[in-house]
Image (cartoon, each protein chain N blue to C red):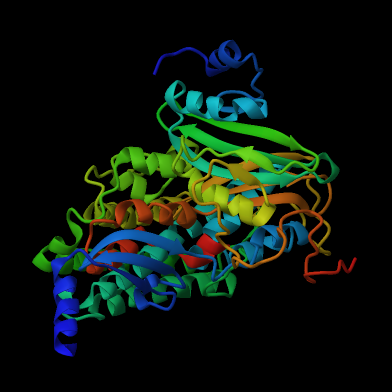
Length: 150
Length: 387
């Protein structure tokens, strides 16, 4: 580990301004640099610990995917987020970088319907394989499967 | 002719080049819940594992969006029902971090007391069930299970006196705790801890001189430090793999910086290493509870007045990720608040989910009997895996 501020390194390599204060930083890369940034975080920033990956449904603004990785020695916790845009459901898969992304991405696909391109085995993980819909979408009704009651 | 066919089948089987797909679970006694492992076997050796989870899925994250900050903590305890105190704590910590809610020192100490007692109780259940899984090899199946459950019952008595419930407590709330210690509780707690502490020595004597126990745990289910980090396993598993990662140390919450305790680390990464880590944690948790009782500050237990309606607590707009060191590892709650009485989005980072995800990587190459030992050493709680 060298002592260079991780903010500086992200700025130099990606021309992005990380939000937050060390040890907790947030970066929002464009979608096409999603995997590149993950690899950079793992190899150059030493964030080898994969904490979690999830999504947020911002209604008309579309889905946002985010994950959190950590360098347990430094300490540094990096949250990386990307807005997919309205109606868009495709996101590159991180499974080639972090093996821990496998189950997390399956869960995210299951509950949000985010399709991770490049995932080797993208099936539902918590719900039944023949389930219809993705429950954590904001337009998914809470207690009736087909008709909204509110 | 028929004879010849039958013989050929048997011969093929013994040649070891035939693969058999076997279903283990979802109602297998060693699964500690409902877990189905589809094992591909070559003889007795596991070649591949497909883990099927989700039998206990209740979509807690959707529930969290429909319940208020007052209602949800008591539901949060149902994610990891063996260690209910820790998941409640993660949720209220996240809400407090967004709303910058002060927590009085007495409440912080009470939270530590509850969380550490919970760790002892949870480890008792882990030890008992794990040893029962490996059953016959330990010379008498349920012996250790019954001993460990006896101690756990005494700890649950303490929780019952404190909160009125034995399993799912609803102890934490935004701003503090819901209950203060009843009269005589501290003395009862100290005498229980003294009893449990002596019993831990007995467990160790029963297990560590037992050659069968050593044979079944040493060198079995090795998790390398690289794999542990990449999958995101935490708690006793990552500490058993040589990484001193404990959130109570790395990012102290709820006054953990006031207490003196050791973070045990083992380097072998096998079932034995995880066992040793947990045995030391038993004692360290007891030490922390004693320190918390000794130094318990006087004062209020909550910074907020008692609530009169469920929608009364409002958290300003913002987001936070709060994590606690549960008995199984990093229990995290990622909360996005929109200013109303309910969160906009809530994500549970269950320790058991990530810990279980390591199984397909470490089981292949082991015998079927070792699957049971490895599962038990991971200590998954399926309420938390499936959420």
